Amino acid sequence: MEYLVLVFVVIGLYSLIKMYNWYYNKKNVGYFKKLLVLAIGLGLMMSVNVWAGDCERCGSRIVCPGLTKWEVIQICGKPDYSEKYFITNGEKFIYNNGLGNFVRIFEFQEGILLNISTSGYGWSK
Image (cartoon, rainbow, N blue to C red; front, side):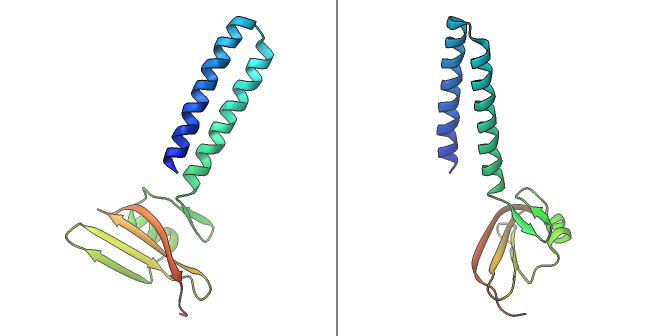
């Protein structure tokens, strides 16, 4: 996914350079401004979608990588199950969302949330 975003950024920069050169050759200010606003708007929309893809909802709040484990506990509550890895100083929080919903796994390294994933369906509480 990151490579695809990089390709779009490179294409966008190339297009902006072409538009800039065209603007100074043609002196058509209105058209250039519209294209520039469109390019910036599309770039912002793409970056928001990439950022939101790594986050998970807990009730009405959102949890994203970079939060501390204490912040995650405050937002999502105490996990249903946790595993500690003393060699790597890592930890996993497992949240059971009940039957018919996926189990969420939050992976921490040195107390910082690195990854959010899902694994199978939950169990009855």
